[in-house]
Image (spheres, rainbow, N blue to C red):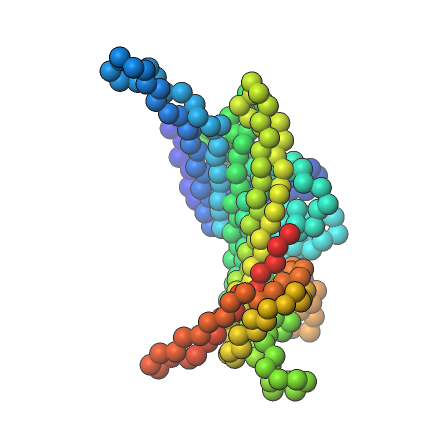
Length: 292
């Protein structure tokens, strides 16, 4: 029986020539097989349990939002690169990516990705994948052993390689309650970003695993915390683009040297809320969504 310590269970994501080992804080794999009993008249008990659906697995993990990587000219971590590529892709065919954690590996399709950023706080991200498998192999396999894909951590670059609220500004997301004057604009204290993807596997008769998987639609959301309240829920077709630029703890004179950008296209405010309590600072929340 292998023994794996948390500091040996690194998470690696690979797509083509792009490969990155993430600073993950956890890694979870689930796998299930769907079967149903078959009964016949005149007999007590089932004749057996037979498959009713294909075997499907999933993996999820949380990691620190690294921003210093570069994938085909785009700054940021590989998960942000994958999510951006899928939502802006003209085609629908998904190739899947190779995921490895604690020696367990498989080909997964991105389900969701998200991150948070707040004042004077380290940004953390999360991601989840679905494993469909291919050919006659199980979607996930591997002996629980010390991973050979350990992250190489450089203490001098760690602070600049992780997104932080120190230099990050999300002024493009703030609410304007007047025209022109900066005093009429709210102050943003934090934001949570998430995007989820719907995909449809195509199964061939006589084969359990899909021959391909198609991404159909995507839903993107930004939940903003600020200090003004304005419903902004206009019933029209207008929408705006929003840019999130995350930065790290770089040199004070040039914090823009390390950054990761995420653009929401044609986002629309869908809800707003506020709560107030005794000895509590009033904060408001608004949710902006976009569909692809």
